[in-house]
Amino acid sequence: MADERSLETEHHFDWNQYERGTKGSSSLTFRVHPDTDLTLPVLQITGEKEGPSLLVFASIHGDEYEGIDTILRLYNQLSPQDVIGRLVMLPTANPLAYRGGTRISPDDDVNLARAFPGDPEGSITQQLAYVLHHQFIAHADFLLDLHSGGTHYAVATLVGYYHDEHSELGQRSRAAAIAFGMDLLWAHSTIAAGRSISSAQSLGIPWLYTEAYGGRRIRQQDSDSFYTGSLRLMNHLKMLVAPDQWELGKSPASIQTIYGDGNFDASVVSEAEGFFIPRVKLMSEVHLGDLIGTIYALSGESLQEVRAYADGFLVMMVGTPIIKRGEPIYLLAALHE
Image: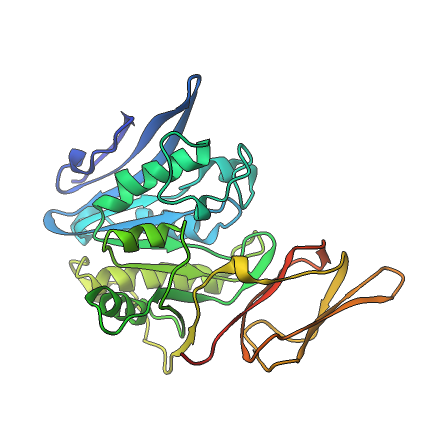
């Protein structure tokens, strides 16, 4: 029978603390200020046979809940007898933002997804990024980072991967992305700095990340695609003892690949404050000059017509109609390399 334990580990996370054939929860506590500790909950399942170590992050942004749902489902469905290797999962990789239900950490107004590989002498979020990079990502064989649109954005449900057909890392990343089972892939030949995936990339560790609609609620189809995709990834990595006992679903009949660097900071932003009414749907293909939507004043006056700056695929749109000046409205991905 699996040994299910809870233990407290201070300051250093030891990946070898778990014996083979065990499942349990632990935590890593580290000092971020002279009088402040931060604790990361960790769930792990270690199989009886040696194999890859898969690291799964959720809630890098504290208002994105699909990944937490996925991790809790995986933890409750899988046993050590099902797993080859080790599955390490952080359901709230950013406990600061999770507590506040915010995209960024309220303690220092830093976006954890822009802070990697971190700084041990920096702000609390920069220290957190440093710990995640050095004590978790650096010890993994594969990183899966689960994201969604959160409070403010509506994002196409997709899996993102490193696009480089000429490197082993790129080939492994694309093969894993296809295995994940989604019908929309976002290929990144370059990756913006500061991300968990850029940390993995710098260490030569293959990675995937997911996106989904968001809205601070979990759509059942997104929950199922994340959960099934994670199992399919484990199967691809040869981490499932008996793949046939799991409902891994059928591979999509067709897969669409879009291209870009995945940098949401490059989104088109509002030039006015008002009420945004879209004229196209998320995941639409648009052309240069197409009307994306209009920002209105409550008097009915049109304040800004938002138009496509290029041909592309509408991968993100603002998820809330009330918009302030300077806030992101939409992001395009390229339809071709």
